[in-house]
Image 1: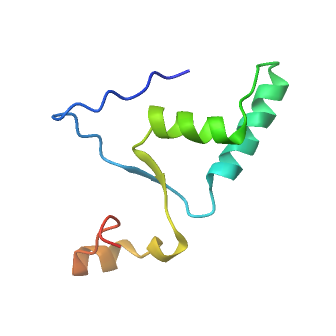
Image 2: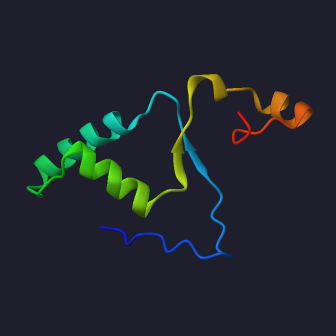
Length: 83
């Protein structure tokens, strides 16, 4: 299991955006399938979300409205964080 991100002032990890159709629930179900196949103990969804936010806060899920063309982003300077 990854260690939680310490979040130092000078440590800036750029966000990684996962596709809009992937959600915490979708990833948790994949995790449960893999954990079941490998006989690992699994976490509940709420614990999974909490650990996700602690360990990999830079991995975020896009909303459907943020799924825009890269040319539009370049021309307008549009940012995922602003919207």
